[in-house]
Length: 235
Image (tube, rainbow, N blue to C red; front, top):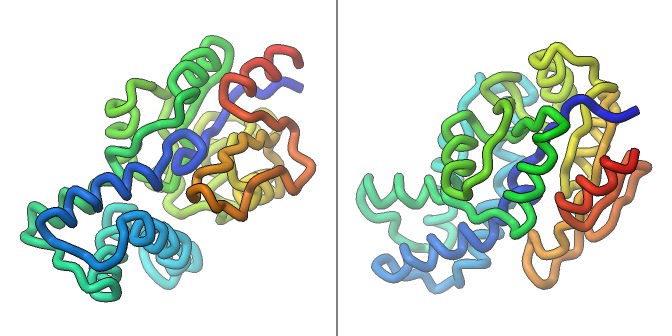
């Protein structure tokens, strides 16, 4: 059965977070030097991502948006790697590096093509402002932005998927989760959604060890969003 809606993971699947974060860290380090290279700090910042969301998922902490979590994690990293965050404006600029991430080369044309036939939604852990800014920065668009403010929790909590589908007035089986992460797809599949794995073998840099291949029985696999569009056209 063809899905009616495609719900996209964004960080890593649509945009290249590592190069974007390393780029802005390198700019910041020009005036606030660090003894650690920007790529390593970017990796460390990303590594704080899921652990920082777990208190919200578990109910130990009320909902806060991803800017808040990224800011808290950045303060932690500045102490760990011993670099100065600068003044409030400089700190805010660096925190919002996540709003300025470049997309993968196939993302814009792939999403625009898929929108001709399917509802295409951002289903990210990012909040509305972040999702809008990423879309504007890269020149793609969504039919609808879902994600943390809509579902009031973070993936891979089961409610994040079921509430997103409900927001579209669709059953989970009518929706397909599109992601470069097997764990995201497993949680979506457990919630009853169709799944599509898009390979991003350099998301974590040249020595990436995870998510190099599909590890589950996903509905579709592709090497790009454009290839995903081809495969969906042939269903």
